[in-house]
Length: 173
Image: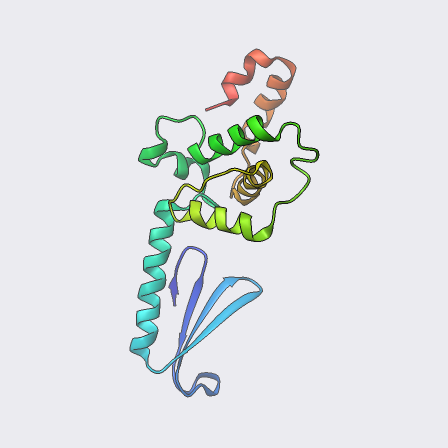
C-alpha cells in the first residue's frame, strides 16, 4: 500500500477478488472508493505516480483544506496578515455586499463557487465580482480549515480577550 495525503491506495493483482486485471483502489473518504481497473501492474504504477505528482502539486498551491500556517508560509503570503485571496473576498463583500440582504445566508451557485475554489486551489486568482460568491468563498474556506482559527490551546486567552479587548493582541499570532 502507498499512502497519499487524502487517499489510501491499494494495489490488487490478478486473483484478488476475481479480478482479471490489476486493480487500483483509491479510498478518498471513508465512504468513497474509486476503483481503477488497469491492464497491468505497470499501468497501476503509472496511476500511482500521477496521483503522487498531483497530490504534491496540490500541496504547493491549494488553500482549501490546508492549515492556515501552510498557506501563510508560502512566499506570496509571508508579508500578509491574512491570505491574499481572503483579503480580496472581504474587500468584495465590504464594497459591494454590505447592503445585500442575507449576504452570508444565501448561497451562490454551486458551479460558480466550485469554479472559484478550483481556481484558487490551482494557484490562480479568480476575479470576484459577485459579493455572494465572495461571501460563500469565505464560508467555504473557513469550513475547510483542518484546525479552527480560535484554537482550544488559546481558549482561556480568548475568554480574557472578550472581557478586555486590549488583551486581544496576545491571542493573535
